[in-house]
Image 1 (cartoon, helix red, strand yellow):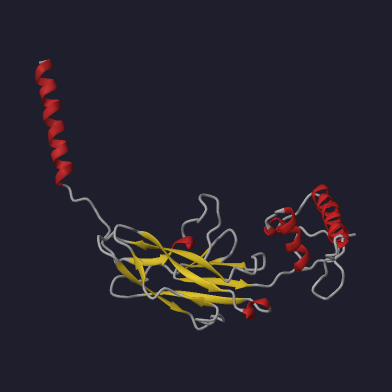
Image 2 (cartoon, one colour; image 1 turned 180 degrees about the horizontal axis):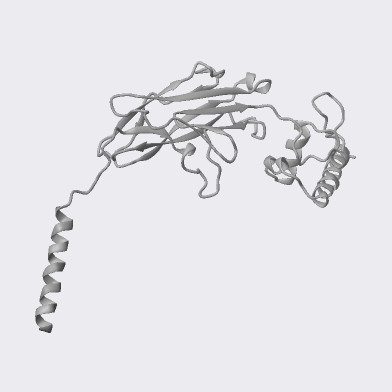
Length: 251
């Protein structure tokens, strides 16, 4: 009796496996929708904010830096392909940045074979006009023979109230250096870009360190170090002047 019971269990198990193999596995059958990845998936891992726009400044870059490469990720909702597929991206009329003057785009943008997520590079040019104005580049994903944009294009974050666009991405940029958060005027004196970059060159600091609040002890050390440097330079006949012709000074 026990052998018969075991045999029945084995037979039923085989029948179950055969039944599962015969059932059709449901697969994605919609169109292949293209969208900007960072509006759905955080760029820096869990907890990072979702974005459909961002910006940066050349202000803390040395003058030898004439351009920056900014990579924008995009993703497909749909099937992976074993061939390259072209992606259509257009510049929105609301953009204030001018092609060839402030930016360039690749001639062809491609979702490469075997990928569901890829990037394309925007080359941002350090034009003189960025010194006085912030420019924006708004990019739209468009339908073509490979992709649609039928994925919901706009969603509102219920917690922040921010509206997110899946098919539009805005990049803002300038070259305007204003007094940063970490510059404490009672210790460092009047802010000038020449003074900030001299501090960083002499003390081998990354200029972006001044974008955050600094400890008073660190700022005081910077003051005493630079006062000695200016005094030594002056004693050797190399007085340091600001761009307006006045002698550089630390309180």
